[in-house]
Image (tube, rainbow, N blue to C red; front, side):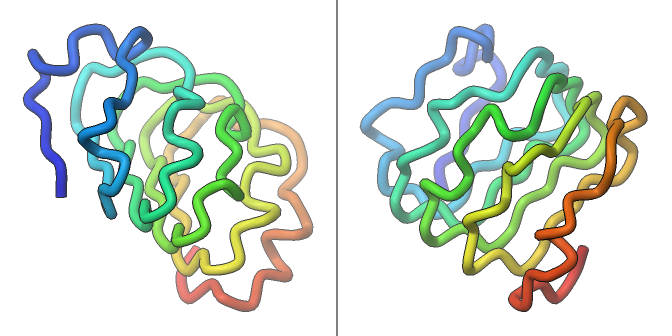
Length: 124
């Protein structure tokens, strides 16, 4: 697992994932003062299976990232943020087993029906 200290990340809105973590299996950036929109840079990391961005102040639409471009993705935690919509964010994530999005008070719209039909979920 790749770990960064907050001072190493600088301003997350301008942080670019380096080649050093292209083969990371987990990305954990939690319990921080990270604010802003999700970075599309997370997409296209072929071995990324777990993403935990909980307890930050991220906002906007969750489908800013093409989560389907992460073929090994099984676990996503987005709790305690300020996201506004889900959209089709997880429509093409065949290995997804766990999705946590509690305490996002700005989420609006209807719950996407495709999430209810995902057979791989063991916790939502």
